[in-house]
Amino acid sequence: MIHFNHVTKIYEDNKALALEDVSFHVEKGEFVFLVGHSGAGKSSIIRMLLCEETPTEGEVIVNGHNIGALSRKEIPFLRREIGVVFQDFRLLPSRTVYENVAFAMRIVGASTRQMRRRIPELLNMVGLSRKSKAYPNQLSGGEQQRVSMARALANNPSILIADEPTGNLDREKAAEIMAILEDINNRGTTILMATHAEKLVNEMHKRVITLDMGHLVSDEKEGGYTVGV
Ligand code: ADP
Image (cartoon, rainbow, N blue to C red):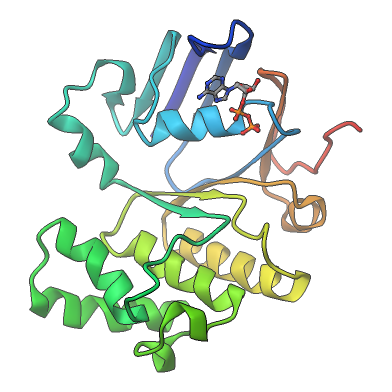
């Protein structure tokens, strides 16, 4: 599903290595936390999965596709396999909850009929059935993040990437987001979540990959948050 084979990443304008000889594999249906200090290399990994960067050395294979060898035409098709949620939600402020999710489906050519069937299902899954006509600024941060999760899942991706999804939320709201992520994972979606939320990581007992200055320093099956101070 996701294979990083001896991946090194050097940005042209930055002589330091962002990643050095990083290898890990994620199977379908896994839930993996990616932890490490700022600058450890988490975003570089995420950007490669989203086809926004290519490895300088080594291979990144996602669902059988080699990220370093994709043609421009192939990128949008692979991107559909991957949903993503960000710390700052990134919703369209002038669109309702329903329209924000519909927007993601329209991009891939879904019909109005498909949207009418799928969007209520998605909003139900994230507990927002009653808010479909609300605008983002009428929602709490936790609700906005739940909209962004519905949007990320709209096209049935096999992988969901969550980049610090609870970073702007209080503990209670963060716990709600984690419960939904766990539900999504139980339905078969592979999840990779980058985070600094030590307590959440320790409570979930999931696989934890720890990065430090571009190196993968641990990869534990039911791990905890072990980023040094
Ligand atoms: P994290 O997400 O864990 O904070 P990053 O992957 O963003 O880590 O950064 C890893 C290293 O790569 C850092 O030293 C950072 O300064 C550098 N880096 C990240 N993105 C770029 C970029 N676009 N250009 C140059 N250097 C970058």
